[in-house]
Length: 331
Image 1 (cartoon, rainbow, N blue to C red):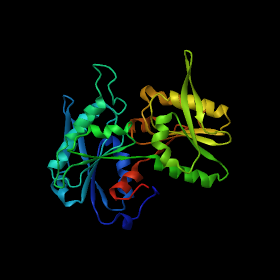
Image 2: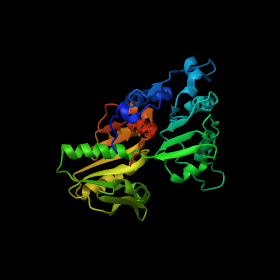
Image 3: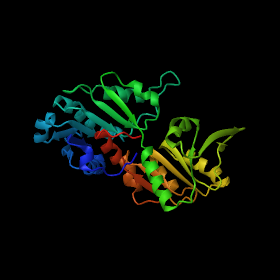
Image 4: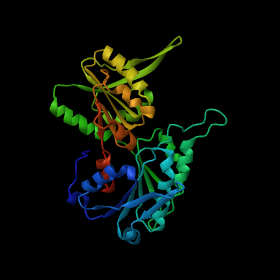
């Protein structure tokens, strides 16, 4: 798949009206630009009352002409609990204003790592958030479609009720295009894909069929736990560790050490979602273990923090979103 800018002819005449949370403004503008005239942005007023609750206002002209568009897209970001309610309010309102072919682009399903209950009393908040999103009303064309990139656990799609449709997408195509560019720049460099555990390997291996694979694993030696190379050969290769998300970054760094010890020329990382609580991204700045760290703009607060910080490079989801709205397949 090519994620490059598409021509107006490619996108055809299907017109989309695009709403977005203010935190996703940069991504939304890129989507509009890539759609070659078939995407129109709607400016929403994201104000608050004195008591802190949201005071939202959709552009009056847009509210009155929603049904005239082929489809309505809402790009949201649930990067912190404080912004979820205001976005759900808009999400519930648009179908009632007769939005057709309603697509909700939720790049990061933020409670995805809390998807199961291991002891009595725990609450699977992944299920809770899915239930909230499932309350979206139907529009003139039927149920809304919720689009999520690299959800943490594939079974979470079944937490949503039958009142909405769910489409799971992957952002690894952005990495594959970046690797094609690197191959042109340095044709003699051999690249291998590493996975931090068996789960990541099972999930992403089909996306990299034409590249060597390396599988890492956590090993326990008495009370000491460390990462070793379970399968594959890193020697003489630029190894790129691929996973869906990063939290503290400890696992990625633990994987990088044995890869370098076994002769990798470089170690880089790619994750779709850079969560990085408590500014944990800082442990990668100036760290000789990591050559490059690619991530997407799925979490806008992270993007603003790491801007212009090496070794980070943000790959925008905008090409994937614009291609999705145009009906172009990823593979």
